[in-house]
Image (cartoon, rainbow, N blue to C red; front, side, top):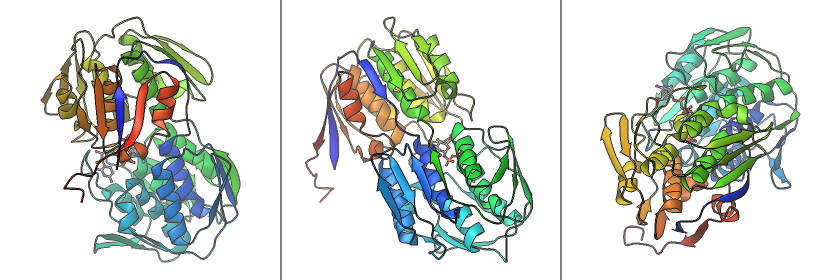
Length: 426
Ligand SMILES: CC(=O)N[C@H]1[C@@H](OP(=O)(O)OP(=O)(O)OC[C@H]2O[C@@H](n3ccc(=O)[nH]c3=O)[C@H](O)[C@@H]2O)O[C@H](CO)[C@@H](O)[C@@H]1O
Ligand SMILES: C=C(OP(=O)(O)O)C(=O)O
């Protein structure tokens, strides 16, 4: 296991080059299963979850090769497996995204139930219900979702009870090879859903309405190959902007797209940041100590839950009191006790964290519990006085490409070090 050792106090300054989006790359890699010819994917971030996705393709018997730093070729493969095993799914919930593609292409899929995770129970009932409405027979046994279809899936009218990102993606992927038209109502509108739809359309799918709450998919007989570039990571971008503001620095994020970050930019401006933007860059200049802000997470285009923990760290050192209300996941405040260990003044009342900013956090040993909680602890460490050791950084490696290198380029004093195993680890 590894940890980050951070000596806080440096104002971040310079350019951060943003990688491809994790939450777009994962479904796109897994959707490549659907193509009957080779697929080339560019701007794929170097992340543990990307490794896991390719390992999943490998275990299914679908070959791929890496081409340079961030491009991959997924080889066409007609005859492959249909089982996504627990060992992989338990390390990456997004593995459930093979369910729709495998079922619609092979007529059969067995995918381990992902189970809960640190941030909430995260059921997949909507994925299963939608596929059943499309004619699939599904049983859940021995911890696996076992799905079969008698011939092609059938187009259906699907109304999602709750807005679900991967639910929308799974059903959209299943629908592309179904017989007839599928309508997904109350669909997720996240940019990553649009990116997946654009990718599938590049291969010959007929998807309309992605980015609105009604998506219509006209099933086709086959998908060809194609070449596609994954969109930039809006959450990585937002994380660097928050780190810049918290450290009272000036950072320009390049290779990104500010249009995906309206809700986040609005809150950064409210917190006192000066923001300038171009087509593919955003620059944040601090105007001094940030002001605390109020935040309510909600599906896109509202404020993203994946930026909540980072803003909790920002409010911890801001001027005044701000609340952060989490409405998507029932347990996404695992970073709060760790931030408190660094001196943060945060009260938790149900789904709301009320933070009164302190002048200074103090360095401490803290532990990551999930991906974005890890990012908030890194931000806290960057602005704390003294040394912070952030442990269990395998969580951050799931979703941030070389975060310590990118932060070091901005002047942060952060190093990755091996952890001495404790008695519990042995
Ligand atoms: C790989 C990926 O893209 N992950 C993102 C995706 O996760 P993910 O797609 O898993 O999150 P969902 O959008 O599905 O979850 C939203 C809410 O719906 C509930 N729900 C979901 C499905 C279902 O069948 N039943 C149900 O009740 C969940 O428990 C949660 O309360 O969207 C989340 C919300 O923006 C982000 O935090 C994650 O980073
Ligand atoms: C919750 C996240 O990811 P996942 O859905 O892969 O757990 C995230 O990206 O913040």
